[in-house]
Image (cartoon, rainbow, N blue to C red; front, top):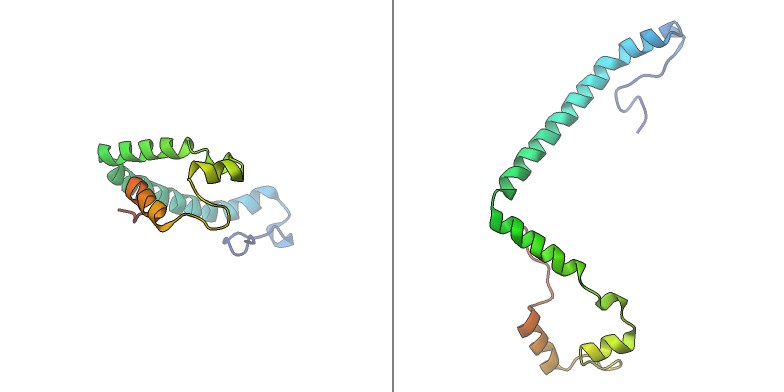
Length: 114
């Protein structure tokens, strides 16, 4: 994004080549943008605080994050991964094995945001 796009100007001879006059002209625009950004951040913080007010939701998020942090399957060699999930490299899981995994771990889908 250029200075012109942000509402700022480049110093030119019109500014009498003085730093003070240049900053005197751009400072109000900068402050306006800064105030706008700070207002957006305040609004985001307020909305975030309202959503986080439920301790159950927050504790669930922390617990789920901890579970994800402990995942190690992505580090296993293929042969160990296949053995762990009682699968077959060429055929994959059987239908019965897949159904047992779904019953044990749930469907492999993303959940909707509240």
